[in-house]
Length: 60
Image (cartoon, rainbow, N blue to C red; front, side):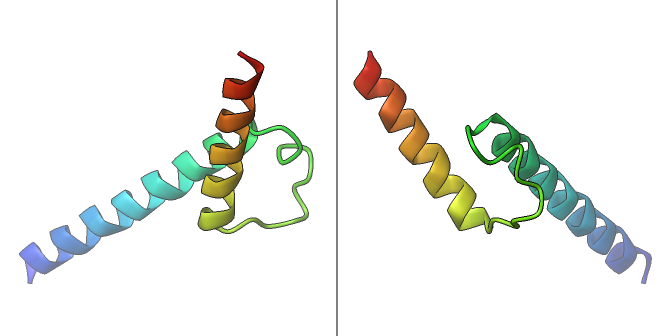
């Protein structure tokens, strides 16, 4: 029973860390940090990040 509780706690912490990381990534993307009302999915955040990195590469 205690090992299950520890496992569940680790999983909750892992999910919190991932969600926090996606929020930080979203904050660094242009046009998404100011628009808090529109919720972006994790896939949308990743696609936006890829697009932004490609745009920066084109500039260079």
